[in-house]
Every structure is written in C-alpha cells, then in structure tokens.
Image (cartoon, rainbow, N blue to C red; front, side, top):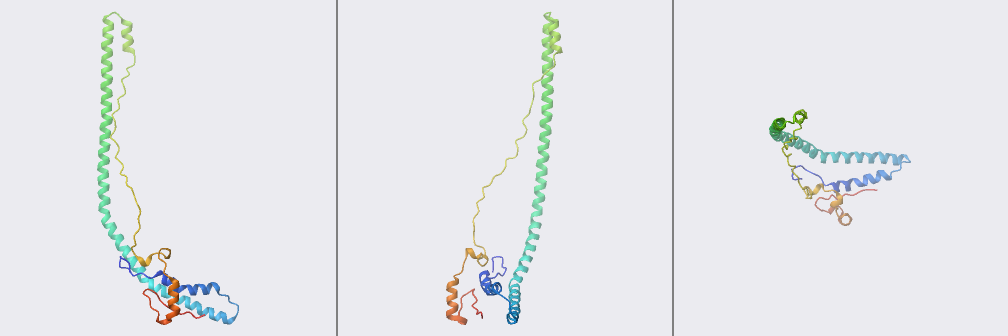
Length: 214
C-alpha cells in the first residue's frame, strides 16, 4: 500500500508469475492435433492470468482514478481564488504602470514646450539686441532660423525585476512496491533455491512459490 492509501501489487512477483506463460507462447510450435489441444488449453491459462491481474489491479486503478478526481476538484476549487487574486493584482499594477507612462509622456510634452518657448524668447532677445546695434539683417536671420529646442526624454519606470530560482532535483522513495526492477532487483537465484528445496512449504513474505508442469 502506498502513502496515499491505495493498494498496490508486487510487480516483480507478478512478472515472475507470468514469465512461464510468456516463455511457453514464444516457444510454442503447433504442428499436430495434440499440441493444438494443449495450446488451446494453455491459452485459457493465459486468459485466467489476465483476469487475475485485472482483479488485483482494478481496485487500485479505480481508487486512484477516484482520488485523482477528488484532488483535481480540490485543487481547482482552492487555486481559483488565487488565480483571480493574481488577475486582479496584475490588472491593478498594469493600470498603474500605464498611468505612470501617460504622466511620463505628458511631462516630456510639457518640458519640450517649455524648452521651445525659452529658446524662442532667447532668440527674440538676441534679435532685439542686434536690431539696437544696427544689425538689422542679422536680427532677421536670427528670427527666421528654425527653432531647435534640445530633445527632452524622461526615463521610463524600470521594468519589474525578474525573480530567479535555482532548482536542484533529488530522489526519495515514496512507494517501495512500485520501484522499477532495475532499482530494486530481488535475489531470484536464492528464491529459486528455496523453491526447489522446500517446495510447497517455502514461505517468504511477498513471494509466491508455485509449480509449473512441462
């Protein structure tokens, strides 16, 4: 049984139980009536093995499916208010950033207009001085020259800092019975010796000792 309370099976034990049937099917050669009848009988044994497998796993599958549906519903119910809260917060921060951007652009417009007016007043004063000194043509040239106020750019608000995380992956055993064989291999040599020695009296927790007629 896993930590979730769902009943599991010993995968290694079931594979060991099925292997003789698999080996038999791979080696089968039907070339006479007797073998045909025997093979059809053995196919029934395969069907029985599959039914037994279904009987063993189906309750766990159904329980897992039910648990998945329950947890998914709970997650959606609990996550939905957070998702809505995030949407509200993002809308408010986005709206304020747009407000700041509008104010920044308006400030640029006002500062450029002020700079243009100051440049215009400076030229008029310069032209008046030249006119008073008798430099009429120079004064007219100053007035006729296009006004080029210095560019004004107000720095925009700094972008939101990106949060960075360092992810380190580790492993821990949550359900020992579900660990693949390459990570938890039973000592089949020793188990075979026990089976041959004790036969029907052999007992090891989690292991089924059985006989096969060939």
